[in-house]
Image 1 (tube, rainbow, N blue to C red):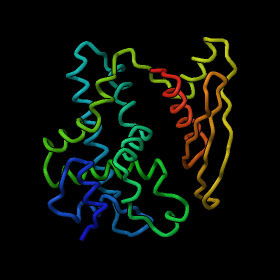
Image 2 (image 1 turned 90 degrees about the vertical axis):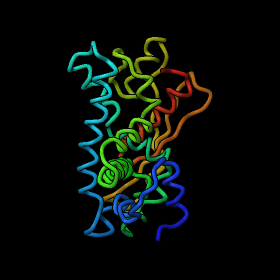
Image 3 (image 1 turned 30 degrees about the horizontal axis):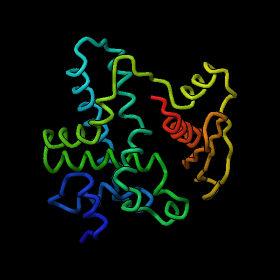
Image 4 (image 1 turned 120 degrees about the vertical axis):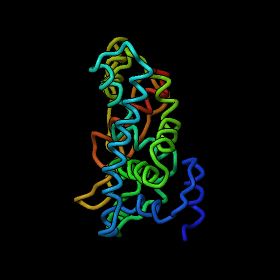
Length: 226
């Protein structure tokens, strides 16, 4: 029997599982059990790529293959899926092994992203492609609507650096403010400092580069850079 937090997750997903065991499996990391979400993740990844690719194909009839591939990569990459997972407050619902719990696995981008894919796979198994497509496109609606054929494929660090260079400003400074977790599964908290900004931004991830990218993304938002 799933608890209230899982019921709230279903509300945020906009989908109620008839078989709660499918949701439980989708949230179970390999560190917890040999019965885990890896197979659902594999299936969900394939469905996600297809659904997004199909939508982009229809949305941009004039786009070339390379343009469509670039746009799709922006939506199906781990960063985006981890953002969606945080919007769902998925971390509190993950079923992790003791080691992953202690090392902050519920906040690790890769685990969050994989769990979103597993949920997509679980919805597909239970309700089929049409329902799965509707949910995925609803979750991505805001991001899809912002896409244009000129959407940059550059990551947030590159965009922030180019923005500052164009205005002859000092480059951003990335400072490690905290390192937690075990040696094999460290968690980095990075602070991004920019002279143009009133305050710095912070982000936490399972590797330094990823934390820097997330902190830069937050800085882009603070500076109102699209």
